[in-house]
Length: 331
Image (tube, rainbow, N blue to C red):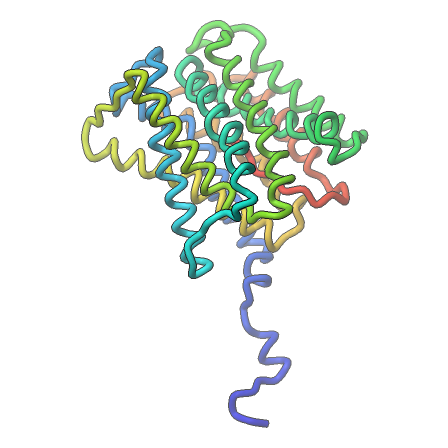
């Protein structure tokens, strides 16, 4: 045997990506980090409005703020993918229409509604209502895109999840007041747009790398929103270095969480990963209490009941169904 050969036993002892990213501890920690990033989005947006001097009713400035964030996120994803592949990350020419369609739903429509909702209701409510995107995605997959068939497990999960949202929407918020379209209604519209984007990603990723699709739709969608917000009179007045650091972190929320979640999906069964998405609303509610002082609502019995129903709904809906469908939690 030559000196540069190895025995089968030696080869098995090496830590390959497959063995590393399928280790239970690594999977949980990576999923937790992703959900922490996504869960921090709503509190960061509300904090950013203050740091950049953006009024809750200033729609052009909100759109500009979102556009800058997603332009940064797109550049981060494209840079990471380029380093990973050792060549510039570009979509195939035939995938350009897919990128543009995905851009409209996943970035432009979803976040125009989302940023309005965040400005007009509590972050606790945003975190819980956004989790309904999981159940909208199931409905879209069954009724619109015909990817899956409806079964008792999906029905039970969706019923629990929507019951949780209904509990949260019953009556007014002790902080934000009554339910409004500009607040809770816009968050629901954002969840619907995100569910369409999730199903479109499944179609488009059959012939294009989903990371490439994501990076370019983030970038182009961000540029479009910057143009629309700026042309409409939007402005951003950063109050200091903290505002800039927050904006960079917000770009990393989308870029880092999506990329890490994609790696987990690459090396694990989809059901094993998506079931961990229940942490997303839990972390979002807790961070809202800590960062935005929304503890009065976050730790109320109504929120606890809603959170349990939504989380169990996600867990049940993400059970093994024999389908290999990628799932990315919404913010």
